[in-house]
Length: 287
Image (cartoon, rainbow, N blue to C red; front, top):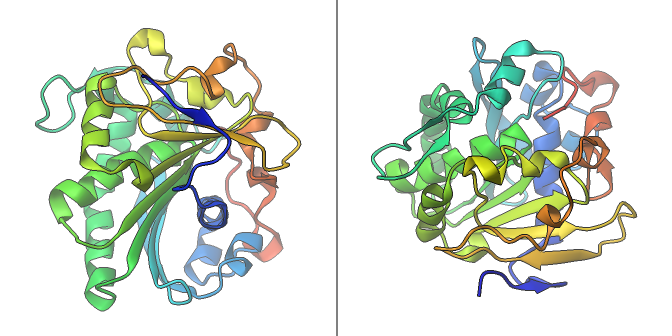
């Protein structure tokens, strides 16, 4: 059996997903308003966050942050998606050349996504090590929208393989593109229990269908697909399994489309308009 389809998923927490989405939205805001946590709706919706560590490579225009939320006792790693006005970020997405992932045989990953994460890997490790030393039992939440979801996928493996923290960990991605081939997604799923990874998709979001399966790219983990534009909470769950190609019963059931509106709206919230005046957005999300 290659997939399970349903309208509920005991592991999926929509409240946690909403918080993760706000962190993902905050990553698009003006940087100074992220550092002092005054970034408008995303920051005001997440009271208790502070002590923000920057994660950035200016050459590749890769950006994210690591923070601790005292209210939720949660360490958060959030990555920004693509700035539509920035050519380098577009190139990161469009380079489909594949490379092997670390020392795992037969794995192939998108070279642009992997290069982008590798450029900030040491910063992620340093920030997490600092915060876990202060909060050794806190849950870790990794999140990102679009390209940010792809970067979060590599961060999850980095935490598991190289940092070896024992903290409970969750990953919520939104509109993430495919990251690697089936050998890579099989490896990813072998490293984490299914309830750890929730891949949220929306309606006809084109980004979740790239790079295409015809180029041997594959999605990993449980998909939670909000299958209309009414934002009424209706969703379908497709669970992917090791050794099988990804399910075609959720977002991939739509033919490839060039529409972008569904990509910029998740859980009824327009990601491109989350940041308000003092938290005026610095980037316009595209991919």
